[in-house]
Amino acid sequence: MIYWLDLFGVAVFACSGALAAGQKRMDLFGVVVLAFVTAVGGGTLRDLVIGTTPVFWVRDPLYVWVALAAALLTFVVAHVRPLRSNLLVIADAFGLAVFTVVGTRIGVDQLGPGVIAAMTGVMSGVFGGIIRDVLVNRVPLVLRREIYASAALLGAITLQLLDALDIPSPAPALIAGTLVLALRLAALHWRLHLPAFPGRSG
Image (cartoon, rainbow, N blue to C red):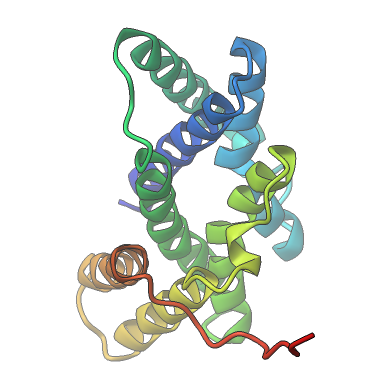
């Protein structure tokens, strides 16, 4: 199930990268490049940090084809009918949830449960979006006040806690992923955010 979730996450994050490219009026090449680096950026960093080389999309080229297909499909659909402006943040929320679960599970399998496994989940979930936002000259979501990386961290911790309770698979992954997605979408809907550093007037 983790493998198919990973492919789904690649497709969703590729769509978010293509949508971000569309907002900047990039051509087809720019759309494909931005979609690809968004889709594989987090997992690539995860594999490099834990020493799994070659990285996942080099070992299995199906990830590359899924990312390219999702980018091209988004590009074609956008030319057929206008896409809603909020699709980018919704696609990003799904990608965040899926990659947090996948990254945490891989971290646990490779290194055992603990804080490092949680961090691999957070890196998998947020780093692709960071690359995307930097390339389109936008402050990354993870650096804003929005509930983003904190939702991923809570999901990564929840997954490990559910594993420790010996809850049968795939329930822990589904519960943790749903939690991340619900927190992110709730934060978008109700404009929830973490406390910010106070500024000085004047």
